[in-house]
Image 1 (cartoon, helix red, strand yellow):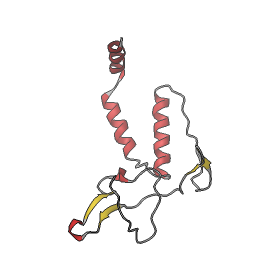
Image 2: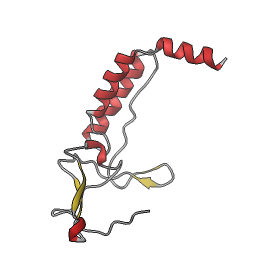
Image 3: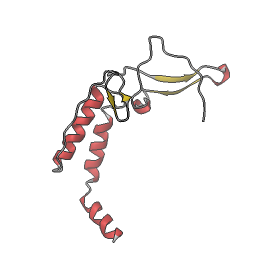
Length: 126
């Protein structure tokens, strides 16, 4: 029974189209509220519609005031220009951990912009 279901799914999958869609989706760099997330939402809705599935994008304000899902507030809309995480102390262990230039998706979803000059804070490894 499971094998028949998997075979039916595999028969319908277009590997090339999957690759193209995933590649296109990641180009939106949609980890923060802003133009990238909006573009990714419209792209995904169009993918669903292309397959005959009804889909629409429901906008919501990214104003740091409007509450949704259990009282959470969405951070302000912004478009990241650069980001990096560096270990600065102790000096002998100083190094870059990650950067948006190397890996655009290193920004955590719903992260917020830092003040000019960045932030220095302790890192806790769990």
